[in-house]
Image (cartoon, rainbow, N blue to C red; front, side):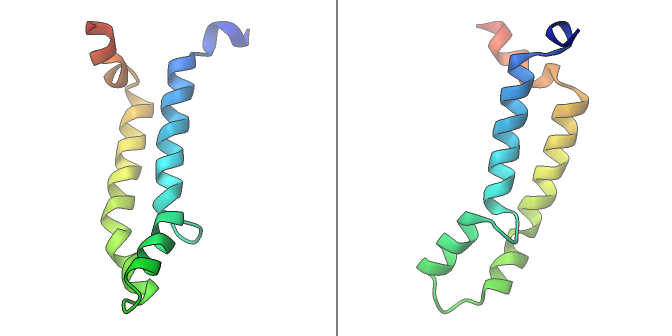
Length: 79
């Protein structure tokens, strides 16, 4: 049964995390093209290399949140 295994908080958390990851990830990262339009004298490949540490940390963050979903619900459960 899908209803018992499906958690809306997990789905929303993963969706938002994937969306933020997609905004900086090449080749379609919209934020990268925004930066390029603001700073026109910098090559786009330089911007892609500058974003690389953020991509790595986003991948680690996604792995941690998927492996331990209780981390994302800790603070809301205290309210």
